[in-house]
View 1 (cartoon, rainbow, N blue to C red):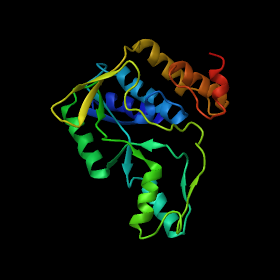
View 2: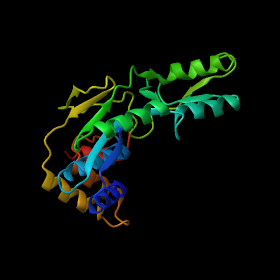
View 3: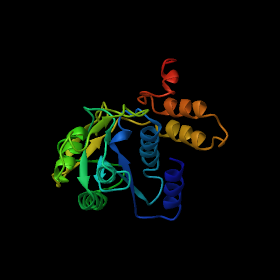
View 4: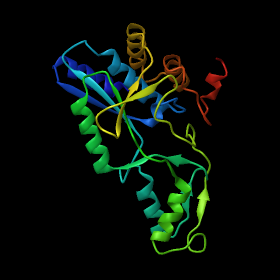
Length: 237
């Protein structure tokens, strides 16, 4: 969040033509700090619209197959070690696209953007991670559960079973590209939001996590913690 703000401010200062923010489906109704800070980054670049030459464009999409942190490389390593494959929840689903497709759509959105848009990519049908794990076992020439088992480890703090691409109160309109849509965002009180973001990013590094997260939740009211120690802050609402 702070890094995005610094780079965005520099882009305005030096009159960069276009700035593309890579956001995530986790920014929609966030349940963890990462998703909430991504949403704050979206809000900040919205606040900069019209404040200089730079056109700010946001792209929001899900998981990219084969990227750092992707589940595919993890499953490959676990299969090589003889298992088990670890899945946090039997019903957990995620949206996926390939690296070339993601890059192509980001560049296309950057070319068509006029500044201030949030582009949402058509990620196709969500994939059940448990099914992905069983398919990878079979494609490796092995059998589930005889050769390699799958272990359900439980949802991690802030992890959702299902991801979303559009927030409540938003809808989309089509573009000339069938896989790129523009999200119609809720009204943002730019002066107030910008002031709160500046205050948040100015917090001392020694500030307690609960205080920091409390400030994040005040800025992103739809951020409701899930399976996290920060749920105590939601009970006060």
